[in-house]
Length: 190
Ligand code: UP5
Ligand code: MG
Image (cartoon, rainbow, N blue to C red; front, side, top):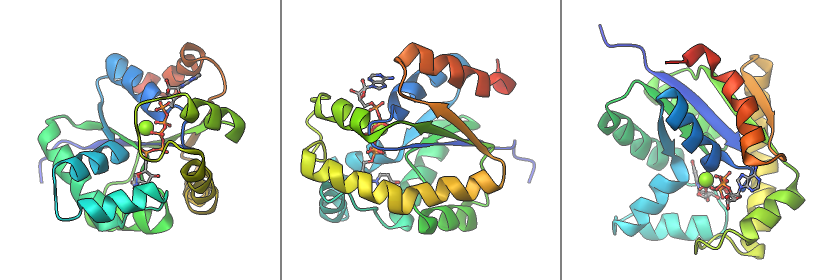
């Protein structure tokens, strides 16, 4: 078709590594639309959808929702977005997510922005966030960390082998992290 090429950047990193915080700053500076898979799933719970209870139970346990559910929400948001540049935050979280997104959308990400942060720091951030998230308690946080290491890091490694990962030290203050992030987006300066 004659459609303009869709540009997708996957934003990955452990729970509390600062994905959402940095995405807000990327949007302000580089004209991307931010799609947080977690935010879309939480909105789906709040909309009273028939999948809501299943999604809510999985988030409470730190488990990864089936790819088809998340991809449907992402595709809908991309169509409604009216943009051609998207930050997909917190997805793909496992090999099943990654392969299904590729097969269904045929979109290959430009690069993967990966926020590297020690667990002690991520735990501190999540426990002091106070936004009422049902998964910000120490039991669920530990489960989220385990799922991240076992299922999500292998996705980062998959893209590492393709030379697509831009790894950022996420331990620093927000504005210092963004200085590094900015450099990775230089090709998209508007
Ligand atoms: N903060 C941020 N940056 C900081 C910095 N540099 N220095 C000091 N503080 C910093 O930040 C977290 C907190 O830290 C905030 O208070 C912030 O001010 C501060 P945030 O930017 O929110 O971090 P983020 O990485 O976005 O953390 P989040 O908790 O959102 O990450 P998760 O990956 O855990 O959450 P997500 O919403 O992506 O997923 C939640 C659950 O949904 C998953 O566990 C899973 O069950 C489900 N899910 C799926 O099943 N499939 C999906 O595709 C996506 C989600
Ligand atoms: Mg987030």
